[in-house]
View 1 (cartoon, rainbow, N blue to C red):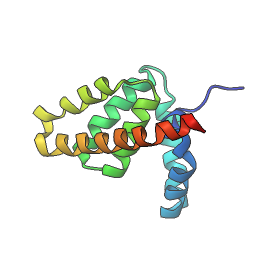
View 2 (cartoon, rainbow, N blue to C red):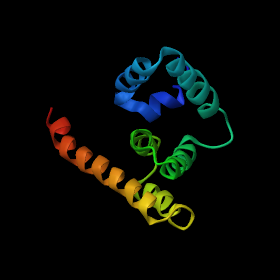
View 3 (cartoon, helix red, strand yellow):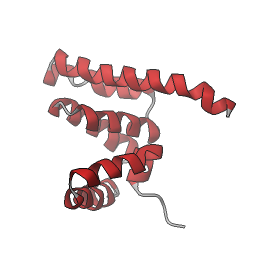
Length: 126
């Protein structure tokens, strides 16, 4: 069996939902994102996936792209980043992008962590 694509790790159990959302927007766009961004750029050697995801988080904070940032915050954690490392990447945005963008990134992280903590006990019980 071959190694998983980066998107398998980044998207995790949200992969079907994310790919369906992209398909609904435009099938050609969905194809290009999957094949180029994830199966080519993300799978390229040079940086480990955790580092790529931390960079993606900082870049998405700069762009002000909440849905994509939400995906990549989760992806960074899925790729092995600790909460402290994700927070560190978001803090690095402050001197370059300002507090409003960084605060928005921290809010999405808070929402994700809160949702994860709410679902974890149920998943463990099941």
